[in-house]
Length: 95
Image (cartoon, rainbow, N blue to C red; front, side):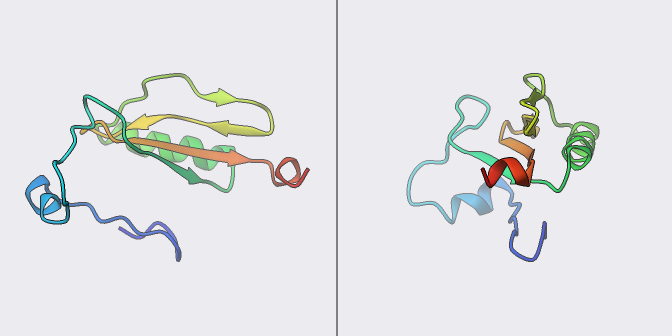
């Protein structure tokens, strides 16, 4: 899956994924090992990402975080993997 010119995801069935691993496969429904934070161009883009994920079986385990200069949501896919689409005001990021 192509997200941008610099971001690609491989979405694999569990059996195929196991072939890439050197150790046991974790269960994301039981423990979080990775949070994939994905920068978005706007607050609206964060909400659009969440809407698509939720419409396709994802869940939102907590409310959105709005710090004014930064906005993010926490989305879990049906397997329990955690994604956090976020937007940060570029002027705030530059100091």
